[in-house]
Length: 468
Image 1 (spheres, rainbow, N blue to C red):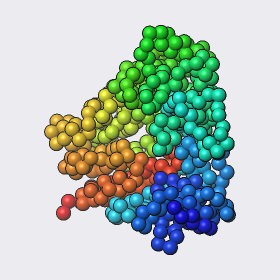
Image 2 (spheres, rainbow, N blue to C red):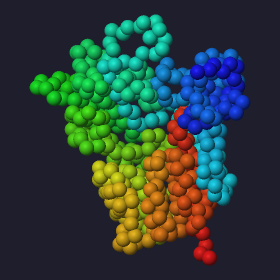
Image 3 (spheres, rainbow, N blue to C red):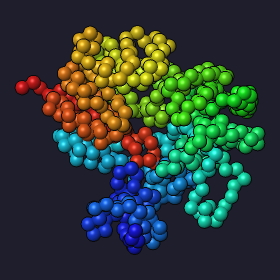
Image 4 (spheres, rainbow, N blue to C red):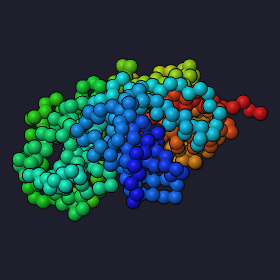
């Protein structure tokens, strides 16, 4: 593959990559910023675009910031650390604008300036780490024939290498208690010769570690292990006891036995080793129960701002029937319930719906109803006839956006307003186009939930067009 020398990086593209143009060829390059001049080694080439790696930076951009994480550029996360935060926000705003105009092709009001995150480090309330008996070695370590005493590792999967894990020493995404717990478990496992999973042969005990924190100061730790042989459970319990003794601040210490060949835990039982089987979040005096399988926005502080925008866009007076689609643990549903006549929440995960009901109960909320099941199967014309035509729909779908059947039912239900919360402006734009004949976009508010990444959340208010 060719080496492209002295190429100027001109912009930011999708998935956190930067962009350069060489004649008629568009080149996508990770870990560089606009204004850098670099030698690019092409790794993959198609007709009119290529993917390349910067093998030498000839001139650094005046925009460039210094990365603060020792794992930057290897683990694959936080790709925009080398962009100042103000520049990150600028490009996220542009991403929303480009998607809504180029994909949505609908008439837009002026897009509000993106709402940045007050906290840009330690902002996540959930991280998941993977154990592996195959430690990822960087190119430099391979070139220098570095041999570690321990080739077991706990950390993050390397993109494109499913069976290898980068050993993480310090991650800046979550409160530092996360680092202390992970490293303590790692050191204890090393010292006492616990086996780490081989992701190819599926042999080994330790599989995953999930750590959840909350704004109330509560802390959940979930250890996932494969336990098949006699005596292994006792060994695993000894590790759990060590964690319990070492970190009394853990309010919910849970474990899962996973003897399957994949890491999914949705179909597995969760056992309580110490404390409660949930943690609590709090927002405007409302408390939200977060279980081990519950979905909750991973940036708690910014989630509050996001929900306030959604509530503002909904324009509730206390008389409205609201449908909250993809309700998760019912956070938005319960958050807006004080301003609505009734809120109906629908969510795929049954455990999340149970949490949503409990969240209503513990907050003394009596005007919510929750249903579990696939959205396109639950939200039907019959469902709407039974439960009433919504005045407002709030929808917060996964990255893939809404199923066309769901969009059709929304259009048939014809609420006055739709508040569309999205973690993927591209699929949001597609759905806006599908609704454009009956709904016009009245407000757009981007929100940054994930500093140092290319991800951006976006809230759109749609209003029903007047009948002709």
